[in-house]
Image (cartoon, rainbow, N blue to C red; front, top):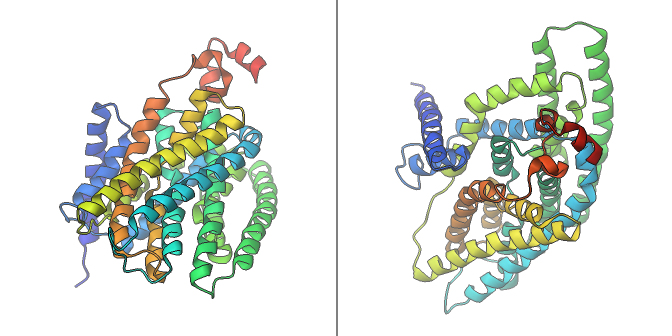
Amino acid sequence: MESYKFILDLAIILLSTKVLGLVTKKFRMPQVVGALLAGLIFGPAFLNIIQETSFIQSGAEIGVIVLMFCAGLETDIQELKKSGKASFVIAVIGVVVPLIGGYFITKLFNTPGRIVSDANGSIFLQNMFVGVILTATSVSITVETLKELGKLKTRSGNAILGAAIIDDIIGIIALTVITSMADTSVNVVVVLLKIVLFFVFALIAGVVFYKFYKYWSESTVQPLHRYTIIAFVFCLFMSYVAEHFFGVADITGAFIAGLIISSTQKSQYIASKFDVLSYLYLSPLFFASVGLKVILPDMNATIFIYAFLLAIVAILTKVIGCGLGAKLCGYKNYQSARIGVGMISRGEVALIVASKGTAIGLLGTAFLGPVIIVVVVTTVITPILLKFVFRYGPNTQQHVEEVPIEEARFSNNYEEIEKLR
């Protein structure tokens, strides 16, 4: 008889994420923290009521794709262009610093007298691989928090989005370089070429789709829901092509699809429909799934100490690295702090990288536990710290760089703000 437990699992996820979201809101924390905690509490890490199934995995994947598509829809392209060079600098430094920090803290503990690793690769590659894990950024957690705070379209928000996308690309390159040293079947040149080709393809596909979509929407009168369906099809197509043919994260394809459609007349209507779908079903499923992935293995005192220090290094290296990059690019101190904090979360991205390392023998079971703890800590703490750092800064009505466009239009100082743009 076919099992229908997935229906009960879904009901528990939707209810628990909402209830715990309201609880965390009572404590003045973003509701996404409650959704993450729901997955941890009801998953294998604690109560073990819900396990991650193929249904949850697939639904969660669609959830993060829609989340990044909505982020693209709500992104100010002109502001993103302005922050392009800065985003690159932020991403590069935000990768190099965690890579170095992860390597040296692991080198300190990856010795027979402290932690005995059962990995197959050389000690150097094992240590470097932990550093590669720390370079990862799960921007989906940050995006949801910024949307909740109404800060996604600020200058800091755009810099975080741009840096996170570039961070993913650099992370893929770093992962490929390390794995190619352990696995000769991986060709670094081919991977780099595929990344370049993806962006060439995205540019061509974007121009073609934009012209078609604009002509189709302006030349004929269509029921509004058709615009949403075509937009969603394009989002899924770009996500599939990015991952399947070019080895680039599917969320990158979804974000680019959202950017392209954001310039059309129907973008606000489309965004409103996806917001409902995301809030009602997809976002709770995705954020709970992050918690469901966590299975804490048995760890001794030394491993716990390493896990604690690794978590500290993971947080500080992103804050310092990305914050320093932002500062070098002319961002103010409060903006640099926001950008640094926004890049902390490792989330499901780090877990995916860790699973790759386990498969090829570069990440032993002794180090898997600390990595999981880092994922949990950085994922939960990022929304909390984001809300904290966004409390500080100058009066937003006097500083256009941190005023969302929609809020500015309803501000008494709108004309003044327009002059500052």
